[in-house]
Image (cartoon, rainbow, N blue to C red; front, top):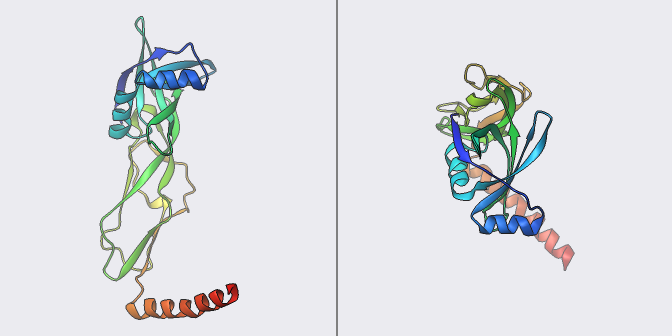
Length: 205
């Protein structure tokens, strides 16, 4: 993952009212912390930061321009999004150094189609990895092309870039391929459910 440069302004007002004013001004309230330093309260440009998250994911590494020639390297640690309106409300940033190893959650993306007559279930959508701050993979791809029924894929079988270490339990089940139910089995299951539903309705009556 490449490093992205972004302007950041210090924030001197705090609280919900101040956060709302920051967002109305087209900026996102953020806090930068780590390495034993005092937290820095910042404001990030909303449109530019949203673009960074879209293009580089939630583990984006930022070079923050703090003015007066000062800059800091930071890992995007937590992005809080409004549950209804879907705008970014707040960002937590972790101060990092070049060459430093960091622990992050990375999405697992399944590619390809398993063998005909099978059904794939993905048990893990993310895995925890340790990587150098400027070389965090945006995702881990898992190909299931042509995989047959009865196949179980564990975290230890994932293909990771050089220098990246798996932190998730190596035996954790990531994906499971099972035989797809036949039409007769689905019909039998549906028929078995109907008497149960009728009995439940009778009991409620």
